[in-house]
Length: 437
Image (tube, rainbow, N blue to C red):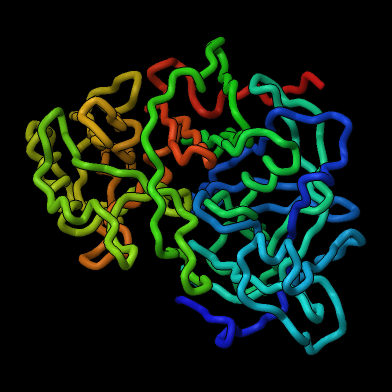
């Protein structure tokens, strides 16, 4: 829903903001790191930051395309270093806010102060949004040299939005907000790079297991994973990131572009054979509809119905020797896994290629990322029918991202991708979380 400044329901909520010159440390890291865990119940990717004075661990759902960090300020937000962002201030302008909270009708507290900058936190799991106070507070985070953990560093004025408790609905147990990594000036990657003057780059590597951590790097490589002594930032393929001119958030100010990461998929191939598609769905129209985006809040890739049907038909044709079984929701094509062999990169099924800007730039999806083991003897094609009228035609979801290293370069608007790390006999769970500080 687009919200104008006259239409805002001004709930009392909070936002944290970062001032680059105020990162209080004599040590200036080249990169930062957050561990990421897959929640087994919701399939959300969850991380944790330390925020406030005194520092409190805050559990957050990772949102690749989220506009900024938002947290619940209604329940137990206590901090002596909390500062509301003032209306019409430089920080408010950087956040591209178009509204202010003139009067908050309760005693002052985090998320409820007069003459403060308002923003629009949204829960991208449930696609709901509200209005909340923009604010800043201290955040501490681990640095890294790309091989090990380094010192803990602090950002004393990290911008975030306060949200009401109801916005937590649908998030994993214990989660108190969402960590937005999107294309804005107050997303976590932008704020961390500004605080420590490193490149506006970040990388995600999501673990396929709920028992071991994946990782988010803020800053450039190197990115090393055990047991290989290889800097995987040196072996990425690249494709342009595309700006969708219309916001895809659950709540946004009119005229805002999307904060999500879109790429230009031109065609899809299975076993080298092109899948017949309505290619007009692969472009973004003037209303911001169509195209392909990358998401960590969708557990599986979601496709426009016509794309899904074409993909499923082509895949089923290629595996005609594997008996089909009754589909298991949310999937539409499932198979008897006792007839499927195993390889280093997962079940031995035809590869699925997303062809990007040319026939030589391909995001190749192997069995570990294309198939989902739903029962001991049942494997399903891990793509979901998104209906005939989705806002985005292809949403590449978490399962297809796991054990792939993705680097987002905000300065040059470019995505680097590794394809499956399983080919290199490693996984996203193999970062060395021991410290060298």
